[in-house]
Image (cartoon, rainbow, N blue to C red; front, side, top):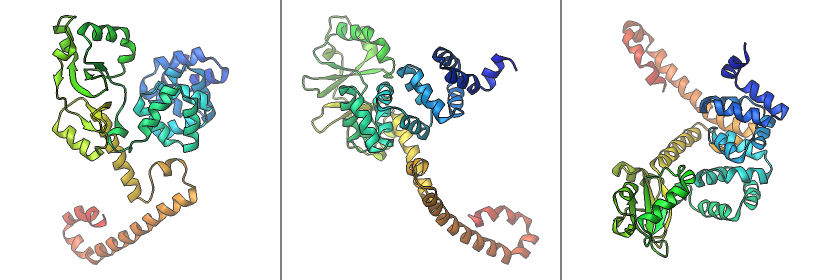
Length: 329
């Protein structure tokens, strides 16, 4: 197999070789050629030590991009093995909602060590979001959104967008929010309107007043119903004083709904979600799982007994066999 074929079929092999040799350029170049799926697969095939070394070899921004392509449990395990300072550099490159999700999955002491190493503005923002219930609008929102003072002009907004184009490209921008001097939400600005108005015109003249918003305490279930009724690409989140604190996207709510459903399934099966995946002792995990399986076995025996009682009927009418799985369930 040629080197190019090996890289295509088993990308973790050259990646591991680059890590072992300390060749960060080779590792970075290889990762740049891989799709998101191949990247996740390649990193998954590395040893724990190799994964941690890789995160220290590449730039924090690329390390953050790599983490976003991995399962949550794997991300936590990798960050667990990093020095708090290095972990802080990487976490600062994540979106605010991803920062909070990751820090919330870590042990409290580990999360606090990382927060102390983060820049004050990032740490303060993370602490603020972590104070919200994770299943509320405050816990699901991200703080990255465009907000401008109502006194700004079209020229001011356009210049800011040009100057910070690279940063704002990660914001999924289609609207900007307009606030007053105390950060109260007063309007929404469609970015397309910037192109249709003279540069000296004030944005307060072209914004949409009385914008729809949600309170930071709105629950996940309420948000889900909200987005079912309103086909918005995002909705601003306000605090008790109607001050803008962030924005919730429908995909955030959908992800939270899926995670909640998966966790409920694990609980029904005798497991307990994140705890089971990371830290639950094998004995406890087995005991919880076996308690559920023992009930399942008894029910299956009962179902089998019912089937045995009617085996003559089943033999006479083969079509009834279709219903055997329903009886067993």
